[in-house]
Length: 238
Image 1 (cartoon, rainbow, N blue to C red):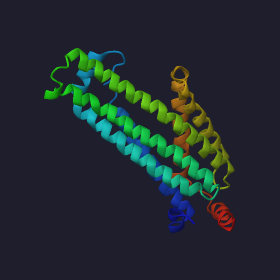
Image 2: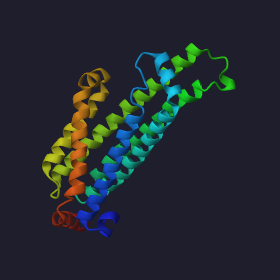
Image 3: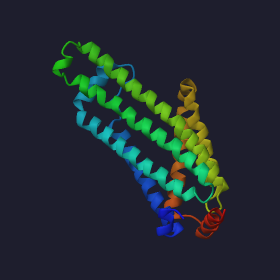
Image 4: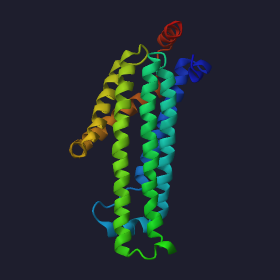
């Protein structure tokens, strides 16, 4: 029996997962809110001016984004425990893809920090002209965007596997599994950036609805405790 689900009732443990999941949503939304409108696509001058004028907000968005990534790592570990009773091997594989995606996302945050180093006018960068520093800023931010695209592919595989595990579970509604699977397929479209850009609004809405639905179900309803215990007992016996 896994740690969280053993120390709390299955329903109580699921609600803890939902609470951490909700914390991830809150921090991720705040991160986007703090940096909203600062980056102007294709306009190096406006972007650099915005970052310098609102550096505190830019840094706050970066820090909040890292916190949201940490929260998702916690969610990944907790969902691994939850779905251990369904299929321990597949749950572990799903966690692996999510953790790789989180690692890429965290590493990509360095590209958001790089423009601040370039734009602050450090002495060892004195030979770089203003136009060059502005161009470098856009390059770094574009590299961050590419890192996000890559991590979304890993999250796509993760959502697909979680969707399958939900569908096979006896303690959560299968509709949640279907929603997560479709969200995973949406994130996989980032294998082709042009396709993802075309479908982007729909993908974001679907992904948001699917994960928020799972989050709120776990937080409010929890899981069917008896069925979780039955599956956990079968897994232990096997």
